[in-house]
Amino acid sequence: MPWVFNEPLVTLTHEDTVARSKQLWEAEDLGGMTEDNNRLPVPVVVLVLLTVATAFLTTIPLWGQRPTAAIYADYIKAMDTPEIQSIQETQGDDAAMKRIVEINKDSPFKAQQGRHPVSMNDLRVIKPQIEEIMKLPDVDLKDYTVVGPEVKIANFEGNYRPNGKRERQQPWWDKGYTIDLFYLTMFFLGVTITVKRLPPYHWQPRHHDSDPRHGDRRHNV
Image (cartoon, rainbow, N blue to C red; front, side):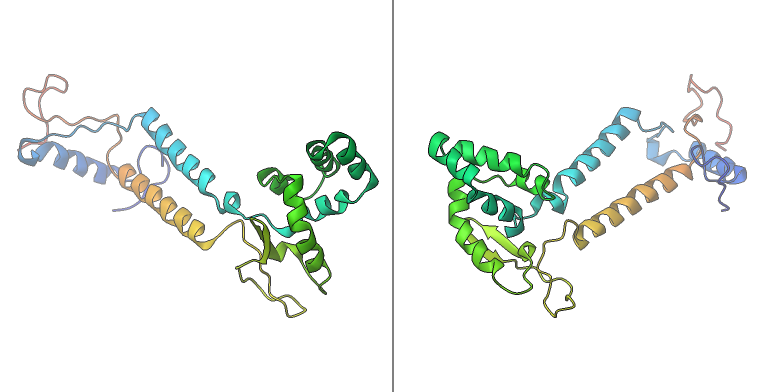
């Protein structure tokens, strides 16, 4: 069964094989059951693709990343500035927190800060813990996770750094996601190849002698 790629969206099969498939299709009654050679409706294909895309976009590990201490380091530094303290005294914590966010609007952690907002009271709780961690030599605050009122070393183990310490950062992509993409890709590829090995969808079989749509059957003997 040679493969033909000159019209991959029509058929992947040689003309002789297509002809034999047509003959078998019309000659086989399948116990009285018949099956037309109709294409899958385009809206159904779009719906399937939309469902798959939505499922992957909403479950990507990126959205499940936990907040790290690095996200709030600049927030904590801004807490002790005269500007923020003045706002706290005159306008309250909410206004001060809003100003802290504005000051850090160009932060490299802007996306994470948006997904994990905190209040001034939250910062007061984690501030002393993060400040203690920052005193450690060669520390990377991205290795520490903020879990409620506590700042803990992340329970992830990555590659070793040149200084001998191990990365403890949650990846935005994981092996399970790669496996899902692989098997889903192979599934759609397999289905597409299988369908394109059949006769083109614009050909319809004659199921019986009195079929008014197609006239006399050609191959049933």
